[in-house]
Each structure stands twice: as C-alpha cells, then as structure tokens.
Image (cartoon, rainbow, N blue to C red; front, side, top):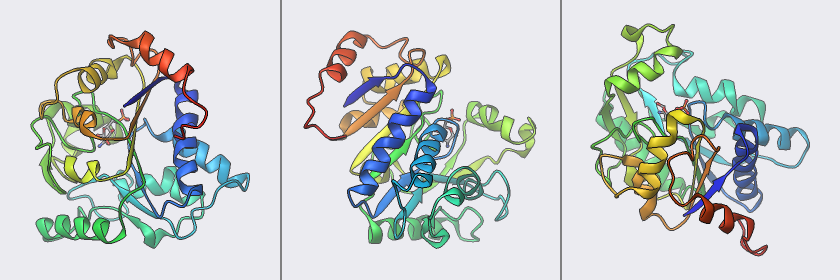
Length: 260
Ligand code: GLP
C-alpha cells in the first residue's frame, strides 16, 4: 500500500486524476468510478486532460460502486445522474458504457447478479477510485460487511443517512434506507485501488483502515489485503496515522521507474 500525503485537497485530486488518466492512456478498457465529494478533484483533472486533448475515453467502460434503491431513474441524487452531472457528460464517454447497479429494478437480487455479470464480462476494472465513509465504509459496504461480499443490497446506517441528508434538502426522511453496492470482494477484483480521503472528519476512518486490524467492522481495512493500493490523503485526514514520516519518505524517494 502506498500512502501519499498531499499538500491539500486540490493536489490530492490532481494526483488521483493523473493516476486514473495514466491507466486509461495505458489501455484500460474498464475503470471504476465513485460518487461522494472525495473523487471530484480527480474528475476535474481528467476533464481538464480531455479538454487539452491529452485523454480520451472512447470505448472505455465505467462501473459505479453503488446506487440508492427506490429513486426513480433521472432523480438528481441517483448516483447514475450524479456521475453524469459531475463527470461523464463533460468527456467523451459513451453513456451506454457507463454502468450502475439498477436500484429501480423490480427484482433487486436479480439486478445485483446482473451487475456482477456485467463487470465479470468486461473486467477486470483496471483502476477503481474510492472515497471512504466516516464510519469506514467503502462504496456502501457498511461496518459488518463481509470482506468477500459481492454486489448486493445493504441497509444504510443512521450515520450514513445523516451524512448524506445534505444532498436531500437536509430531510432525513428523503434519504433511502437501502442501496445496491458492489461488495468488498467485487471492489477487490479491480487491479489498482485508489482511495482518496480529505479532512478531519475522515482521519479516524483512515487510521483504522490503513493501520488498524483488518476487520469487517472497518470495511475499508480490506485495502490491506489488496496487492496494489494508493491512498491519497490531505494533512488533516492523515492526523491519526502513526507512520506519517515513513509514508512521506517513501513517496519522496519513490523510484522513477515505479509507475503509478
Ligand atoms: C457515500 C458513498 C461512498 C463515499 C462516501 C464518502 O455514501 N457511497 O462511495 O466514499 O459516502 O462521501 P464523501 O466523499 O462525500 O465524503
């Protein structure tokens, strides 16, 4: 695992965006996208590179981590719409190649199985960007999620619903209680995981994920079991890490030949 302590939110986003763009230029056919505020800087960097003719998403498939259950298609807070509004509509993604779990399906278990099948048919995902919940969730894998789980329904914790109420007019009753999310096993199948965490509110979760025990209670601790992980944090999100000096030293002395 590589731990990068960026100067600030902007630098963190640019670095994450560069990593994803490098994968696409290197021929990635599938990439993994995430919602939330954490990946927005990475999307901005990729949009900039696209506008400067440095990057093209022609033929690239994108897989989102998760989706709310019960929001009608096109709902502004559905993750499908979010990723259009924040990223894919600004670049040359084919909308038909942008995949999300179908949270409006009549048969949710079948939608979960379909999503797994689509990823398997088009995978492996070369690079997956991730945020982390304040409670350590990845995607919507809340504490207690099986470390080998696949795409399935999850019930949101009260904390996650409260955290996300800001997107629903601060009205908790509008926040769905259930979601479809890639499992921790599904996420782990991606070849390179890039997690980005910004701010003091994520400091505890980052420390638990990176330096704590591997435990279903901190779903993001599954990163410790993956062969290729980059965690990008700002100084606040690094506040509770024990080995900050080592992480800085390793990054400053990274061999030039070591890509990504
Ligand atoms: C949301 C998403 C996660 C995201 C997390 C943090 O609920 N399902 O994929 O990483 O919460 O969001 P933010 O980046 O806005 O803090």
